[in-house]
Structure formats: structure tokens, C-alpha cells
Image (cartoon, rainbow, N blue to C red):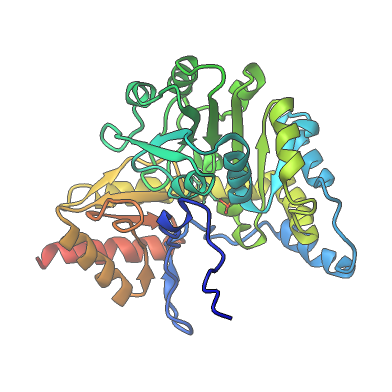
Length: 364
Ligand SMILES: *Cc1c(COP(=O)(O)O)cnc(C)c1O
């Protein structure tokens, strides 16, 4: 055969830079992973038990709409389960939203230092991503609105944002929504909502109830179940209907559905995790601040630490790695080479990280 043609990806696919996950330690090493915003207190014991119990039914297809999980979420959050769609992680749902509402020639608007999955899914749908500058690492509603054009179909907003940890107040999110045309979809990605302590924050749910062009996307990954891959979204009927037409018919596996339902109802565990995080987020922020580091105030389960240069940041990364702490470099993936993102870990890990970073400061 002399035919050298081969299958060709759709336009744009090969322009996508692959997602860079947080590093793990070398296999077999004792390194502590603070690079992926995972729970330092494990998973809810009730979720673990529910996951294990599902092992008896592995030959049976799961219930395709994740009904029990949606009912648990509905109870806990006061939402009609019919307004909820579950996904194989929230990444699954974000992909489905992009595929459903974006196409060739369309634009999606996001913050320059917003979540790095948004450009991938936007380009995968054939659309163009429009990056909008923040003001001091915080989303700027006026700049976001100024970037909206006739081609804009989606605005991606992580609130709080990853990797900066900053957030928009309820009033600012409402101002953003009020400035959008009614045919522009506002996706509010509240991946870190469980960790927020700011009194002027509100989850996207309130706006979803009032508007026809808003969805809220959530995840269990940052609350102890990253391995199980469970995400959920709440939206108006017309959006839920569209997403349900194209999602995988069994997109959430049975152990995940069972674990998620148990985790959603385990308010004690979730409260414990939130309290641990708030305590050590405050402590680490105060401990590092000054010391030639600037910690951006965070509402999530990580902090972004700014150093005086990219060189200092990478020296800090190496010094922490030698001491057994793997944190997240955010140069290549997020364009902030002078910063490191550090997940809030155990008490011992936080004390260790602070000691390493502060002693580095003494030996320039
Ligand atoms: C971690 C994260 C997600 C992805 O969560 P999964 O449910 O694990 O896919 C989504 N959005 C943001 C902003 C995140 O940081």
C-alpha cells in the first residue's frame, strides 16, 4: 500500500498543551505530596465503607443517572435532584459543557491565571479561548465583561480560583452575571467551595435558581475522594437536558456513586476537614508572610506563595523536594514561574514546609 494518509485530529487539537498534573514523589519514596490539593485527613470513613460494599456488585451496570447520589446531594444542599447531573469527576462535566455550548468560531472567556483545564476543553470543542488579566491575582469583573464579544458563548469562572486561591464575593459574581447577555453561559466552578470561610462568598447555586444561563460545577476530589472521580453540576432544566443527552450513559461508576452519597451526608467529616484546613491555611499564611515571600490570601485548600523571582521559586521547590515535600510549580502550566502552590496538608507537613522555606530565607 502506498497510501500514506492517516487519521487527522480536528483543527486545534494538536495546538492544545496537555494538562500537567501535580508531581508525586519518586516511586517508593516517603515524599509528602502537597501538589494536588488532596485531603490530608483521608476520606470520610463512611464513604470508604460504602465504596468497599459496592465490591459485591461489580458485575452489574450502575444506575445510569446516579440517582442515589443525586438524592443525597439534593437533601444536603436543598436542590431538586432532577436539576443535578453527576460526572466522572467535574472534568467530565466541564468537557460536556464545552462540547455542548462551544464550536468553531466561538469564544470562551476566562482569567489568565484560571484553571488550566478550561483552555483544553475550549480548544477541543473548536472554539477560541480569551484570557483576561486579573488585578493582583484576583478576577476583575470589569475586565472580564470588557472581553466579551458577539462571539462569546461561555465564561469559565473558578471561584475560588485554582491556582491563586482568590475568590469573588457574591456581589461581584452577581455583577459579572448581570453584565452578560442572556445567551452567554456562565459556568461557576466551585471546586473549593467546601473550604471557603469568607462571609461574603456564596456558591453559584443561588444564581442558578434565578437565571437561565448559569451552572454550578462541584467536585468531591478536594474533599477526600479524588481517586473515586465524582463531580456534579446543577443547572436549569434546558441545560441539564442537553448534558444528559451526550454524557456517557454510565459515566459514574457504582463504587463512586455509593461513596459520594455517603460522603455528601457525612457532615461531621466535612466539617472536620474544613476546620483543619482553615486553621493551617491561616497558620501557614501568617508564618510565611514577610520572609521575602508573599502569600496570596486563599479561600481554598492551598496557598500560592510568591517569591522574588522564578529562580528563587525553583530553588524553593528543589529545597522542599530534598526535604521530602512535593509542591506544585506553576510556571509551565499557569504562567506564574515566580510562585509555588502548596496544598494544606497535615500539621506535621505544614510545620515542616514552613521550617524549610524560612531557613532557606536565611541562606540566600
Ligand atoms: C481540581 C479542580 C477541578 C477538577 O476536579 P475533578 O472533579 O477531580 O475533575 C475542577 N475545577 C477546579 C478549579 C479544580 O481545581
